[in-house]
Length: 151
Image 1 (tube, rainbow, N blue to C red):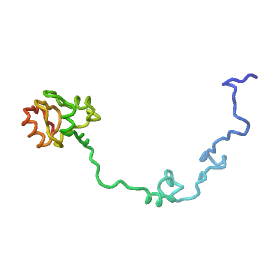
Image 2 (cartoon, rainbow, N blue to C red):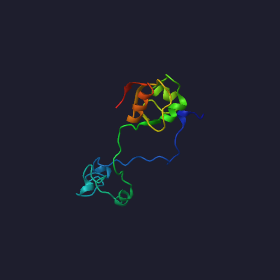
Image 3 (tube, helix red, strand yellow):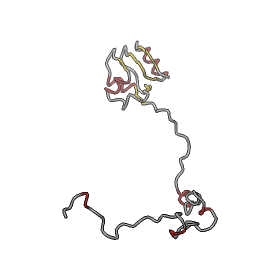
Image 4 (spheres, rainbow, N blue to C red):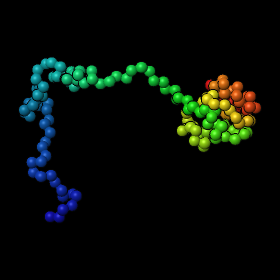
């Protein structure tokens, strides 16, 4: 006899038939079907999950999440010093340009320009970014344009 996939069988005694309970008294497991009389475990759906066996200690030991976590994305901060180092006069400042300059990680999260440093570049054009009040003042002072500022 050749060995191939359709001729492979488990060794003798390796497999055992499942105990089928509740199939009549002739089977030896009829009437109460090995559940005993009455009580929570004798009913269908009873026993499993209703009693916590030794789980209280584990539940008490698990750390609970405290406080509040906002689902709003955090602003990516860019300072004026960074703009001075990476942009030239008359350039456009938007999330794409900031990503290309390597000042932010992703376009998906909002960007906010912060007033750390002093703006030395003239005629900058800002779109799709948030900015602090001090930055707005410096941009207008340097003849910059603020097209679309996000809130």
